[in-house]
Length: 428
Image (cartoon, rainbow, N blue to C red):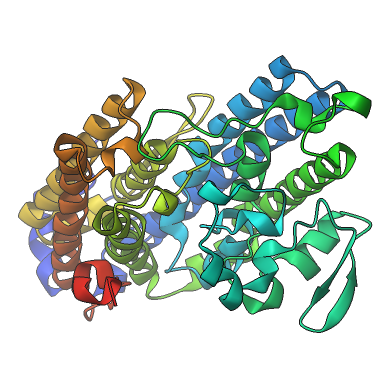
């Protein structure tokens, strides 16, 4: 159904931003766009919660009766849980409530030695421990430890302990103790095969009982895994409720007279500084598998694919849920088109082009060319796949900037990255 008559389109050039109305006399178009934006957020966080609860059930079943099959079931549930969550990341940057909360659930990279045993070839260089001594705590092995001069009782590995005491211990962001990537490490273990097709190879017996236990402290490892998973579910319950009807995040977004700034800030900052820069260009410059977003599971190609898809479906005002349910409505694309059809089409085409580059990268990874193999400096074809996706993200950011201008907003300062803006600084 066409949203605007030709007469309404002609009148848009002289109407102020907040008063562009649909031809049928219903709510102003910006209000409808923000309602769609909030509805998609609710659907995405709802799906993230649902899949996290499935992960929680799989982990509980595995810990009740550890087995190779149970560990694989938990891994499969973790991979499925990432699909909706990564599509929520476009709600960062423009929504302070989300940005302040996100570090608890998706922070990376992490110093694994904070949590569990590590082997030297997959660990941080020794000099890194001088900067972050907590990276050698191994809380699963040590029921007490000294942190910043204080003796810490770690006998009970509870969600509260992980969140309040261990996460970002000593004020170091690399001390990630909670969220998807802590759980990922506990399921897969370190990925020790740089530039090869293997992911982490943690044995299921790291959770076995008695003499079958490998890695030591299997009971504490299980307690940590359960606490981290339960905390992830609790955190997602909070954010799902915040975007549901009556939720604080939803109310804040809908009450914002400059709500479009939220949408465009999230799109531009995730496209440019966060994804193209910190998550992709940096790793490619350094040829460093440790810069993979999901390095333990070798799932980084999917992280990037679904991040890009999240940007695209917010612009188009349509999200396909994990059960096939479609959430859609008046979109930012509609709004931009009402101002300038060519700009809307150009941004839509740029988003489509990026998604195609992400698809090429995803298909290559699923065919055996894993993301860490693409980072190998000797693998020119793999590096080209990553660079093409980065270039697509940068190009779509330029189109997002055009959209900002055409809807009458002041320029938005998107998140930047030295890897894009000052590459020489990366090597200093």
